[in-house]
Length: 101
Image 1: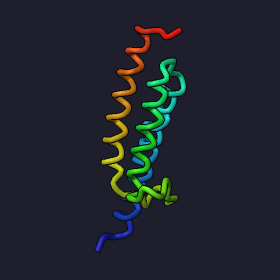
Image 2: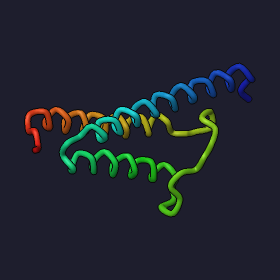
Image 3: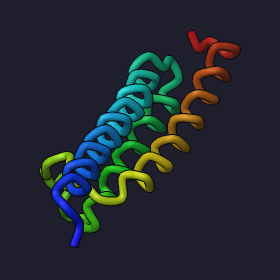
């Protein structure tokens, strides 16, 4: 049986991972917000929605509120958000070279 210090340390780590995931969401959403190309706006919104909906395990529910220290699989969420983040960075870089008027 884990002792209380291990449980508290695990909860603190999960909270920090949850905050890091929120930072990724903010970065992706901000790039979508600044995008000129409607496709890049849609990409950010659709991919974030997809990732967040997949987290619930049920297509009918979009969000399931839970305390951050009780969220499981944050490493997987981070990996998915990191992928979307890198793709949206590439889209943003490409957009800088192709200004849409």
